[in-house]
Length: 133
Image (cartoon, rainbow, N blue to C red; front, side):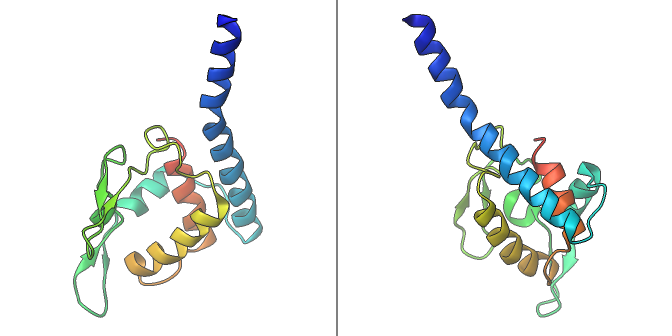
């Protein structure tokens, strides 16, 4: 009985990781179909830390502005002050599990940070970086 309970518990704990793998794999295939190739965690990390100039205000922004450089730690929205849960899937098992949510946040955050939508290559590189944290 104890073995069965341990097995069931292990299976339930693993489900978020399978959901993450499915969502990320689906999006990587989609971004490859849109022209992205050889997604790179190193390129994703570089893009994550790169500063972009806000053409309206003249200040600089990066993903770390809200999410911090340590993705295992919570972030804080630069405008609203709202807490943001850690981005690292190893710390926050809800991250990278839902295709719809990932797409929504790519649109919103790329426009705010980069001043435009991210390319398929950039999205794939971000996913390559984030999925291994």
